[in-house]
Image (cartoon, rainbow, N blue to C red; front, side, top):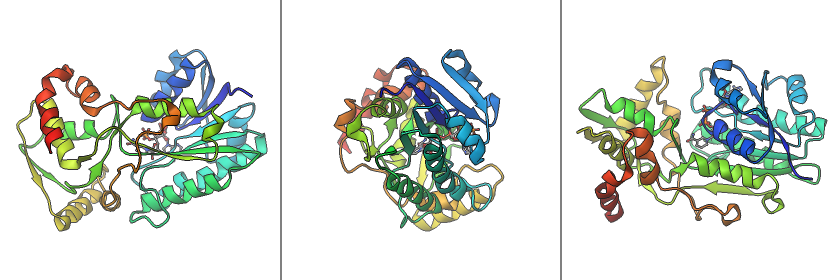
Length: 316
Ligand SMILES: NC(=O)c1ccc[n+]([C@@H]2O[C@H](COP(=O)([O-])OP(=O)(O)OC[C@H]3O[C@@H](n4cnc5c(N)ncnc54)[C@H](OP(=O)(O)O)[C@@H]3O)[C@@H](O)[C@H]2O)c1
């Protein structure tokens, strides 16, 4: 059966809006639950996308959302807890409810968002909760439910909260104290992630599989921050903190009401977010390069201006 009707949980988020757009382009009818219409209203311009106000944690509401759907994509996730137990609720309990709702409503296809480094033995609560959620979703794979999970490195794109966050923070200080400067990432473009989801939906070769998704190149966090500063044309001194100072910085930031960084994030950064293999061939995608895509949205300038930076990065 060709999948035509898809419910996207977390469709209002950064990755979600790209996944929803890709499914729309592919001719799908898409149902997106939302909590806050202001976070989702940009999706209303696509005629075959319907927005439904719903509490996805309520099993009855979830069953209703999934009724008549061919597939569900679960992108719900958080980086910071507002209160203890939030990771468990979003990354473990919700995936379990989604599996139950698929069984209750006869939905036979489930795509689930995990993350590189997700593991039940992970150092951070984020990693352990993501690992537990992914494991239970993969364990649900069977004849009645075809499951695929995705484990991306950090995702970049016009609305990302990674490079854009550093772009914002760098404005405020000539000297930038950077925690975990040696943490490794292999950033993957949001368009490639969305395409992998769209390509996986009907492809039985991906059933029961888990895929790591990375871009073409590995960077240390410090290189990425230096890249952002150059793109923004800002002369900044990046001050790399040692491990002890990085931990203290994360603890301090974790106490602030606005959560930019927490000690749990610091622990997550201790595991390199780097893929063991190139982008999975099954999706037929050549992943986009950070240097080719990010300058256009970070600074509104043409990537050619950064050829020198690219050459320098290659030499490192
Ligand atoms: N961005 C990355 O670099 C990255 C890397 C690896 C994995 N991931 C994973 O990819 C997924 C999407 O990430 P993103 O960057 O798109 O995040 P995002 O922009 O923060 O979007 C998260 C989505 O989940 C929804 N959500 C969050 N907490 C919820 C809750 N308690 N109940 C119901 N809905 C909730 C949000 O709804 P509202 O709009 O109402 O807030 C939003 O639709 C997450 O699972 C994340 O862990 C992201």
